[in-house]
Figure 1: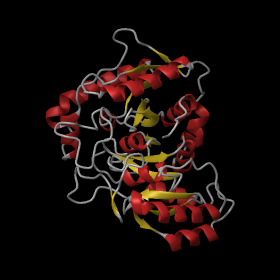
Figure 2: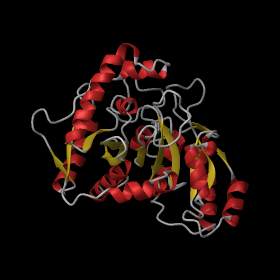
Figure 3: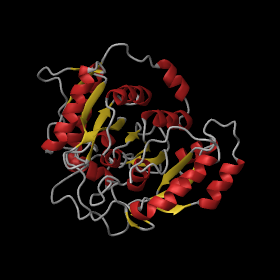
Figure 4: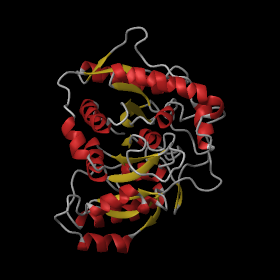
Length: 374
């Protein structure tokens, strides 16, 4: 079900090819809620070929995704939306994190496993090569987790960088792509001021200082997941992409943010019973990024679970939702596969507002970590 990366497109042709692939593959994948054949073909026929993204097919997350700020900006740059992707269906909290037009969304690598969520269909569609880019949103890991479990790249932008309808402030816009270069293209055309931010950023000529934490001090990380991510981090260090500081006390340790996240999501902006933990985590994060530009962790402590659920007291969000509370940009980069064929993601976290540098660092890391896909 998994195909090669989409490396280029021709105006008009790419949209037709994307629609053909969706028609052929999606009855098994169930990544789409709706496919807009007629509208997409008409847009492709009439698009201004001088626009920078003319004819690029893309998918939007969920039934309201076409109205998102990012979708509107992509369309203005000439990209063509081909359909809306699966999100959790009513009453299917654990059974599936994606409910498409043909049934529950499956993981492109293992149909017996979930693709993650809530940007489930977006990740599955990109991983299977149906579209080169799909929009997402991330309130607790909803871009990074499906990106990790479907073996694609996923970016959660700095909270507030792009408009979002989420009143809690936890969710931020994101994107899922096969390659970092496509995520950079997304940010270039949806973010006002991108050129200024990119111009102010000087890519490092030396390895980027970083630390690695397998658990952020509190999560219970699956040894198989940790082994894949640790091996990827070691390859980055050996290649000179990062310079790991492994001195005692250099790595970041946080307090479990579960109570604070739940309280904010429930409408208490103070964090409720978790307010103290949130304040302490913010203090530790500020101190960390004042001295070190990059944090590396697994995206999830567990591998993709079955459609019946992860089991009691298993939080796939354990390593992601702290950065929704803090607002930091974070990305998921494919790190490899567990012995049973499950994709694993490496999480890269940077200082607030450092989205452009984060993408450049992720691109350098991607060059060191070519993924041999099963």
